[in-house]
Every structure is written in structure tokens, then in C-alpha cells.
Length: 318
Image (cartoon, rainbow, N blue to C red):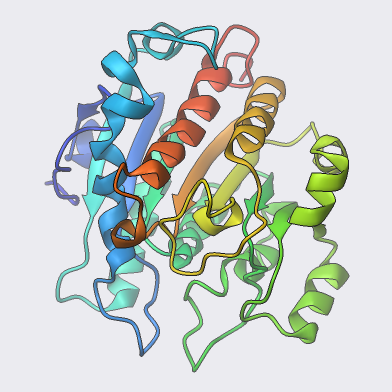
């Protein structure tokens, strides 16, 4: 029985498969609408529309269904990817509780990873990453987290809500499967206080501000990421500069450049195995008229996908 709803259109040219019994794939993409909402948030909020908003721009971020030459990949995406690639649709929340919804999300993700897929998640707010972490813990593979965001996301709770968008990296720090993390693009202010910053540093998280990346490039960041562990990458759209990705709820000037992040992801994808990646916190109503935020999000995914599966890439060697 399907556990997801059909997307408005597939991601690039992926086959849409809603029945988990047929989730036999090397690459899978799924939309997860939201994490645990805070009391002041509407349900669903605008960010829950992002998975389909990104997919709608497939012809712009990957022209010709992946069959046209891509200069960032050195070839066409379709010829690089394995044949078994699916779009699993969107996991939407109905009348169920958040706990029930999160259980469904964990089960869907766990099934995909146990089947050997590289999994891409379109959110939703950053609370989406928490059931992702629960699924990775259930699978049990030791991994390292790479986190791109303007904000630390290390709150244990906000107003009694423990699984919201201010908390995913705190939850990552509690998982035995997570060997460590590198957090990139930090700047301005968010929900973190001095205590959360101290807790992240005590844990051993490697923190890189956007200013540090501008001054020194991604070289020191790459050196901080161990090469002998598979990666899970979580990208909050507000980690990038709002001049290039304006469609976010909390824009913070001075963010990372899209082109630099594309190159960074390509380097990671070529040198080691990437278990999966999420892109979260896109608010379509704040996007520019040409949907540049959604297009940029698609390019981040395409870069990771293409370089993962290119000859010599991290997935080819898996």
C-alpha cells in the first residue's frame, strides 16, 4: 500500500514509485513535509510546499531530464546514474499525531537505506532531519554529519517542543551512529544561546562561520571531515547567501556562495560515500519570481548525485 502521495511532477526523470514494496533502487528521493511544529506555526506551513516547488523546476536545474550535457558534471546526469532511481513521492501528514507521522517517516527512510539506496530528502523545515537521524541509527552504520546552515540548531527544546527545527544537530549529537560533525556557514543570530554553543564545542563539533569560509575557503573545512566514514549531509537553505537563495524564512546576509557549495559537495561526493542528503527550510512564497532558490537547491542535489556516481566517485566505489 502507498505511504506517500504522488508528487506534482517527478524529480528530473525519476520513476515515481509510491508502494514501499517496490522501493528497490540505488537512488531514491522522498519529500517529507515537516518536523514537529512549534505552537506558533501553522500546519502545514509554507515550507511543506517546498518538495513539489523544487521538483517543478527540474527542467531548469537539469534540462532535458538529465540527458543534456552538464558542464558541472563533465557529462550528462542520466548516463552517470544507475538505472534504478525512483521518486518516492511526498510523506504528508493527515489527522495523525506528529509522533505517528515521525514513525512513518522513520520507517520509510529505514526501508530505503536497508535496501542500499542513496537517499535524498526534500523538506519541510529542519525538524525533518530528526526522523532521518532516527532511521540512520536504526540502520546502524557509523557515519559523519556535514551541516550547512546559518544557525547552530542545538536546542534541546523550544517551548516544550523537542523535535522542532531548532534541534536537529542536538539530536545528531545523541546518536551512537554519529561519529562527529562539521557545521558550516554559521552567522548572525538564531535560537542558540551561549550554552548551546558551548555544548556543541564540548561535543567536538567543528564550527565554521561563513566569514571563516570567505577568508580561508573550503580547504580547512574539507580537512576537518574524516575520509574513512560515510557522510550524511543536511543543508538548510538559509546557510547559503539570500542574494542567491532568497526563498527562506530567516534570511541572513553574508552566507555561502552557491557555486562554492556546489564545488564543495562535488569534492565530497567524489572522495567518499554519501549515504544521503537533505535540503530543508525553503519557503516558496519568499522565492524570487524565477524560483531561483528552488533551482539552486536542485543544483546542489544534482552535483552530489552526479559526482557520487561518476567513475571514481564515492558511490561507484561503495
